Length: 188
Length: 367
Image (tube, rainbow over all chains, first blue to last red; front, side, top):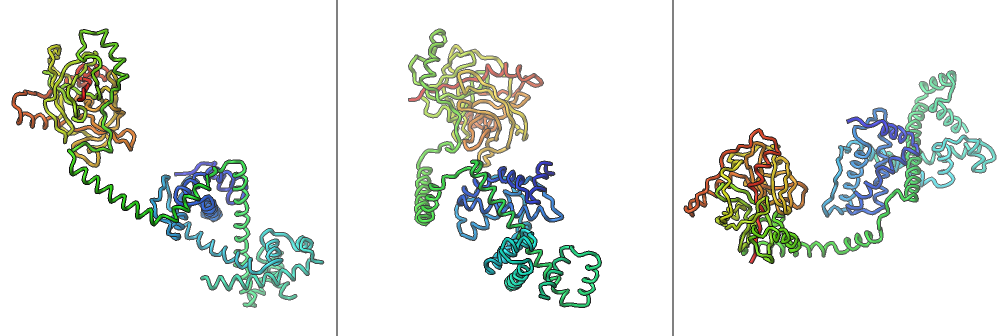
């Protein structure tokens, strides 16, 4: 089953983190997932978390080179959400009443395994970032996440010149790397 | 300071910001200095992680904004969280008690239903809806007007409480009819009404509750033997997907319906019945199910209330069995089931025209 041109466009947009595409996918699918979660012992917050995680899975998938979706976005998102939610229910031992899932699903186990690994690494980076404290965190994020140049950063953070900012950035980066690799090596 | 410059060089190299000459000399340095090489590899990995971290962070921020926007526009359905939260809370708090109570209730219910089944007369399965029709007093009133006009035909005194309606059809032109046993259950008197609205007195001559079949006989001097019946009562089984049709009285006039055979067994694999996909309503019970050649293949008796268009029909070979059993017990009745069809190859309208005179409404007077 091939997917429509419109869906292909949406997926391209999603891979580029395009706001309109995200909004369209969100609008088309969120209520379905919310119903699914709420009808199965979940809350609104659970629904939002599960849905957003599923979109991250799709985002990660859409960025890979060999990316190909063999079903509708709706089916894929539904399948991922179902899998994630079943896992959470089992984890929380809330899996007591009959769980009802009415829509078609596709196998997503492999994608979720990839996602779990990636999200583990993301978690390590986030926790390392949390530990280095401010202003290191903002400084590094300005350079590495928002791709600002050193002159902008220097003026934004109030350094007298770019070299001082660079010096500070270097110190911060060394701390971050140390924290990151310590956890990364422990984790693996 | 050296370290800072070195790191900057590594980053520029990794980002492809060096010109060719710089790049060549940097690569030579990498080759001769394993420490630098290791640093490049490590930093490459780290920057990759950093990039991904940034991407996901931006993506998450986008998701968060989108959620917020859609929620403000009312495009995300509001859930009554206070009540569901409360229910969830109560559920979490009392689920153990609820579980115990539910299992006690369950056991009690099973026990009671077990006792009920053991001590009560055998009744048709209750989670299916039998298709006999409740004829209300109101309908009776409108009916009585036409009955007054046609006084000669009137057999039922006005005011007689008629409770249930069903359908029956002739299986022998001498006035023998077949219907569902549940249609005539608890009846004191029975009338059958033909397609012209004429009533005839009838009596029950045999019932088989297990097969849900009953044989009636018209005992009325106004009844004229039609000679031969247009359809036959089939003996062989029918194939899946075979188109079928039925005639019956879900209302005060005859109604035609068509469908197909959807399974060779009935409710819960009951081999005595077929499953048919057809539109049927209360009042269709006892109606004949015919195939395109004009063979009666079954008698409609129930529909599943939990599903749409699932109707069950007792297989017609059971009519043969019931007649055989009856003959053993009571040799005074000489039923000869119709075995020839003269409807083959006719179009449906012509077929129905011939059959409709042989299909009767059953009116039951209760105690």
